[in-house]
Amino acid sequence: MSPSSERRDEPAVLSEELGRIVDEARLVPLPELGVGAAQIHRGWWEHRARRRRNVAFVGLLAAAGLAALFFGLQPRAWQRGDGSSELVNAAHTAARAESSAQIERDRGEQVEQEPMLAADISIVKKTEATTDAVVIGPREVLLTAGSYEITITEHAAAGVVVRLPDGHVELVRGVILAETDGPTVTLLRGEAEWIHGDGSETKLVPSTQAARTPQAGGQSSAQSLAERADELLARGDRDGAIGVLERLLRKHPNAASARGATLDLARLLKASGRRERARCAYSLYLSRWPYSQLRSDVEKALRELGEGPDCDGLDPGK
Amino acid sequence: MAMTVRDESRGKSSARALLLAAQRGDAAAQAEIFDAHKVQVARQVHRMTGDAGAIDDLVQEVFIAAFSALPTFRGDAQLQTWLHTITVNKVRNWWDSRKRRRAREARAAHEPLPTSGTPEDHVASGEHLGRLYEALGELPDALREAFTLRAIERMSLKEASAILDAPVSTVSYRTRRAEKLLCEALGIPWGEEQ
Image (cartoon, rainbow over all chains, first blue to last red; front, side, top):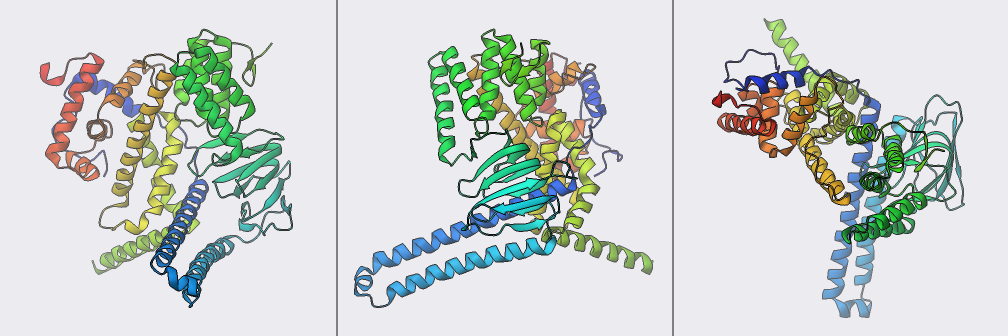
């Protein structure tokens, strides 16, 4: 598949002018790649774990469906207690056992790869009911069930990847509190980023308020604010929408909808002539999601808005 | 000659072993495959999107998808060709989500979609490159893919046909059609009219 191989094909481009532009496109130098093999491996592992969880979930659903069907067809047998309930219980137990065995197999594979956690990382279980975290690698752990405090020293050689039911958190330095129920992650201090199961990223900010996944209750109010902003826009109330979006970003900076809201806010502010605030919103977007596919579009918008004082989050500097 | 045959056989079996190890999740095997093909995939992504900011994300997606789908890799095609096909699919998704995103932003801001404003317009010498990719983004997927593989990647009709799983004649037609539409969008004379 060598592009330089000799060809006797028809020409790909007939227009000389278009041909020149296309040649120029070919000559644009390739920027340095920012992704490495270790990152790919982690992503693959997470993808596989997610797929297995889905398969186990579908299996359990099927077992539940079969049990429901069985009860539907045999109501009297169930009432008589002639042993059919034991059959269903046995089916449930088998499904649970298979699921547990799968989890154990997964854990076994993880432990085989890298069983020891690096010395500059510590994990503390915050409740008695919390189960042990599974060490996947020297800088990678899986939180199984409960509440954990994970600390990495200030001068650690590298960060730690903390895997959760929804994606993983990359803790560069500092302390996080993580609960698998939700899941919820609170950055107490330091620097961390949450890469959700769907691939979206949230840069965590030190806060006393927990960041939650879209399924959790705290996020639903962020979602309702986003919907409210859409409603206001549909009615043509641009200023109202701006106010709601700003509220969303200040109250729920780590919500899944924060990314889209930041960009929407920036564009609305720009369209309404509030250039300084628009510049801050665009800058905030770039700082929080630096690898966004829309980066070049945002940079262009910033160039159009021109230079200005540094921003404090969404607020223009004094 | 016998030695050559034996060496080729050993080469094939070690390549097979590498793929199997990568499929099992062996980090070293995955790293070897990644290192061998990352530049090719990154270059293809760059040429197909014109957006340097999209490269890391898409390269990551391509390799994760490839390692996840290794059990379905038949081995009768080259790994490079297979990766090319995965890349084309991922880039197609990227264009789709970019279009949706921009339409949503335009609606939110009560602004029409920008007619220019391009992924590569920060390249001082290449303003027209931005216009090229903007116009490419407006093309139907099939035409855009044929054109980028043939014209920008400089693949032969046969190579592009294998990647796109389409007959050579179809790839030829799509490339020509794409060129005509691009010329119209960019306001330049088309080859057959010159």
